[in-house]
Image 1 (cartoon, rainbow over the protein chains, first blue to last red):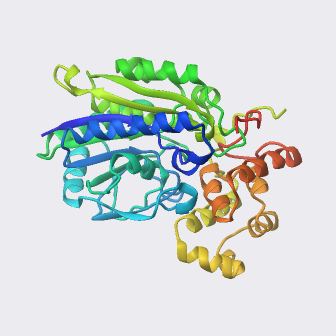
Image 2 (cartoon, rainbow over the protein chains, first blue to last red):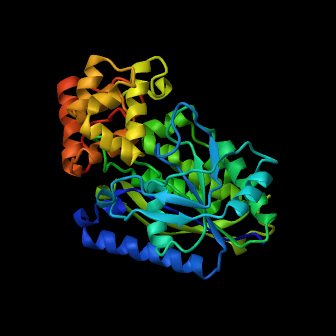
Length: 280
Length: 120
């Protein structure tokens, strides 16, 4: 089979942990958009969901930091955060180690990918799952792109990783959904938390929707850091989705800067039918 | 007004080994409930395993979340530790802003502030 669903969404911990501090319409509209994303994904009847995340030191530290890693475990525990702080109860999330192994073996043909048979989820994966698989009944294949501890992977490698992952998905019989999660411009976990540049975000999302490789890769890390904050490095997760769906366009179904959530909250879905031959 | 400082190239402190171990301690605490219990029962029993200077030890033990921010602890590591220590969101943000006023901008790493006046 191949990809049956692809999209992107935000994962900020405030989305669930600080809902009570948010404007009601902000929270309700975002939650509705995430529910719509879940329904769209469920309609494609996926056998597994790959989540391309930008984790926040839940598993990987600067003593041994992979640029790319995929989980290969039977189950995953999360969140590592205080459940009351995050607003998500601690639980076990099912994996599929056999599928992970096959995806890893195929991806390794093109990109050096680390694997992990232990993996604890932080908000970077738990917040999306809270909305997309709230019953935790769909096998999850976690993927991490290091966006936190420099040196970090160049954008063109994130694209190439997405392409390699797409080839791997095409090589297995399962129906695969894939979601990239990250922020666009934001300054999380700083005194500037809540600062967002909507114009920067909309320009990036325009590039993401058109899946314009040249424009998507036309950022330096220094520029992103200065203009979009250290949180902007997480655009790698969106770019990996673009690489995995090269030739397809996307639609942003929701975008709204919500300062108490510390990010421009985003839901985007790729129109997989828009591509002629799918990934290059 | 805190001037933005581009500290990207300094990473997380390859030349500041002590900061590395501050972050490693907090990383281990953040993801290990048993270690958290040991730490809050007897902090010295955990701290003995890490190479830390006096300023760092004091900031961790108090805890002085604002000073840990200034020392350059990655915000994504510190945010979890602040929550573990019981700081509410607004208290956590205030601790960092107050520390900027007291100490000046962040000494290393990615989490320097631009103006310290985010929207929250």
